[in-house]
Each structure stands twice: as C-alpha cells, then as structure tokens.
Image (tube, rainbow, N blue to C red):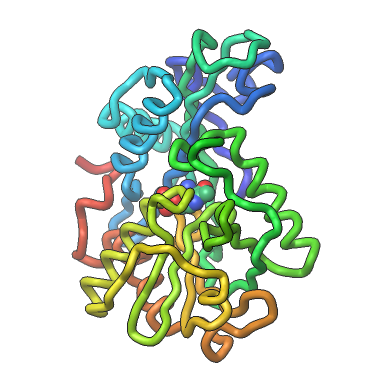
Length: 309
Ligand code: PMP
C-alpha cells in the first residue's frame, strides 16, 4: 500500500489523520477488542469514476461481527456506504484504493471485557498500487500455526486481535522463503490463507473449505464461486479439504479483497498443476477485475459509484 490519504473519519467527523486521537490507553490497543473490514475501490479512467466493490456486503458482515461481539455500530450498512464514498470524495481519490473501516473499543478502560468500552467507528483509506494484482502466482507453505476454533475466537467476527495468528503464520512463511501461508483448522483440515480464502481444482471439480471450517468466508470467495459456476459451468463444492489435496490438485487460487484473485503455483515444494498459473484462475481474475471497474456489464449490483449519481 502507498501513503494513506490524509483525511479519515474518526468518532463522527472527517478530520486530518494527525487529529484523529485514539489513546494508547484505548481498550482495543491492549486487547484487540473490535472488528474491521477492508473494502476495495476501483478506478475506471474511461468512466472517470471510482467504484466501491461489494461495499454493502462488507458492512452487512461488519454488522454481523458486531452482533457476535455485542458491539453497537453507530450506523446501518447504507449510511456506512455513504460515509465511505464521502471519505473517498473528500480525499479526491482517483486511483485504486483500499478502505479500512474499524469498529473499536476506543474507551480508555484497561479492563478485559467486551462491554462498556466506548465503541467508535473509524474509516481510513490508502492507495493500492496498480501492480497489486498478481498474475505470476505465489508459492505457499502449510503453516505450523493453526486457525482458532469458533469456540475460541470466532473467525467470522473478523476480530482485530485474532490477526496475531495469521501474522505469525505470514512471518514464518516469509522467513522460510515462501510468499504466503495456508493455515489448517485445529483438527488439521485446510482453513484459509492469512488474509484470503483458498479454492482448488482437481480434475473438473473445484472445492473450498466450508464456512463452518473455522474460516472467514470471504465476500470475494462468494464472488469467485459464482463466476466459476456462471462462466465455466464448474462444479464448486464447499466441504472439508484435506492438506494432501493441496499437494495433488491441478489448480489453486487465493481470493480476498486485497489480493482479489491470485494463482497458487506451488505448495510446500510441490508444483500446483504444471507449476504455472491456472488458466481458469487467470480468466476469473480478469473477469472480476473488469466487473470491479464496470468494464464488464456483468453484476453491476456488486459495485457502487463514488462520484456519480
Ligand atoms: N480470510 C481472512 C482471514 C481475511 O482476513 C480475509 C480478508 N478480509 C479473507 C479471508 C477474504 O475475505 P474478503 O474476500 O471478504 O475480503
């Protein structure tokens, strides 16, 4: 990511980032109490328009996360989409960008609890480099660090503090010479990568871990499953996936808001397919990128214009 845009939304007002005062004593700083989202904004130079990708779906997920944690979001999803567009307009964003909504326990209570800790909403945005979408593919390793169980820290609530696990896994992977880590569930099934979901193809069938396999069932994952079914007629199963399937599949991809769709070319030293990015993966990557900028007429309901209408 580039240098963040200067204006942020903090505690009910748009302010320069330097004036957004989140205390070092904020409950969330010590205990990771809060939930977050990541939303992609995609610039179309021909339309001179910026599109938010699946903004409402992200805020609906944030509302569900807040319900799990018992937090009160200050606004509903529609108002949050509106504030997000306003943030981008105020910063004059005319390039691909990434928005970070945070719902935090910002009160200065040093107490381990989820109630009465001053829930506040923050929004910030940062540019995304043009080359953020990876066409050459990544080399993955299966991490020794496991995903937390729903009964420990629910991954579907996208809890800030729960990202210490993926952070450990990512550092381990990079230090061992890989690009990304794939984490397993506590009982050893494939869960997800550190900030993206995993889909694999063996023969004609695609498979991805089910939403009940201790993953964050991503919005991009839903889009990719839909595009695979609609455009290739593929069978896509949501089911438990074994580690050995990662080592023997013909095609694999990671998908998430930040990476969009990324081919996996190797897992723990075994080439995926012939070791080159999968053709279907690259086709879905192109299609989703085109949809996200409305270069493609398909699924206009997935995008919201920031400047127009
Ligand atoms: N899994 C994890 C752990 C993530 O952090 C993310 C990114 N939000 C994803 C999957 C992908 O989710 P989405 O497509 O909704 O961004």
